[in-house]
Length: 462
Image (cartoon, rainbow, N blue to C red; front, side, top):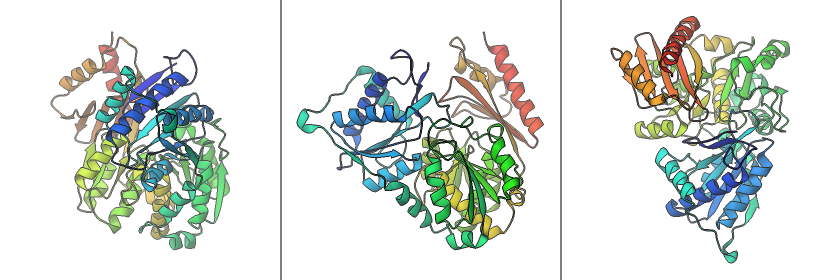
């Protein structure tokens, strides 16, 4: 069993001894600490905290503990029940709430769950704020409300529709263009909350016909829930059979978006943000941001519009911070996460779908043809499993020294930029691994570069 405390929230497996995973005792402790942090720092006067969850089997159990703890701390809770991460973020803003908690382990398998913690802007806590929550939890510096000060729970099932309506209202979403295109769309929602919201969104956008895979939100994921090519063979095979124009795949909490071409080929998660940014920049030129592990293609497209690209450390909160610093008009992460400030500062697959379909309708191209218009890069995503005796920081220092003649960025792990390729090594926030991402103009070259670093790391390990 595993419990990981990081900038990405409190994430763990269900079951086992109290300290081994995301146990009921751990949930109470961390939610109490979060509520104490919010009480100390919030500027909101509503006393509300919004709670949403994905469709994981453990979701109802975790939710009941979270609701009880928050009301025990004296907060009123807006209970969205099953809702996407971006919907929950949107609801925090609309409710003028003090914060929000999303119960989702994102792309992790079904035995995992997590507490993703939001501030009053509907954005993730930063590293310093997260560290304070962890300190409060460790010290158990929290106090519960007296009986007359207990909070109440208000169920609210209206935010799915409110979120959809907000997407339709975006200036760059052209419902008439999408409707006129008569798109046939396939979707794979991996048996989570995407199955509740994506069909409604697509019909509202004027999509002609939808082919649904795994839209029942029962939490028994039909395949590995991370939307990587090796997990998407079913929708890939469906595309030509159904004569679908485009396929969309989301992760369990619907903040990542993968696109499938009409011929069943992968558009590439890295190119979700590239294509959406291309459309946004063609209408509203401005700066862009992605993280260090994302494709150079976004940089290339941004510069083609005479605009500036900036890289941030990995983690949505870091990307958002850099976007605000640079007044970026679009940004996100290369894992299919689109952050569009005109909507809100959070990765949102609903926004990504609406902007992409508008782009596709106006281009009047097949998806595969659109993909061919972007700079050709290939990213290899590899990893090294960690054991307790491995000194990750020491290894990264040695790697940095070994490649000192190249352009090195060390704001998040170590990224080595070669003239025509790059490799990025960093310790994962969510799993006990070192992630090794490498990019080049062919997959073979990218994999070889990543493999070279894996061999170097293994030679350094005890």
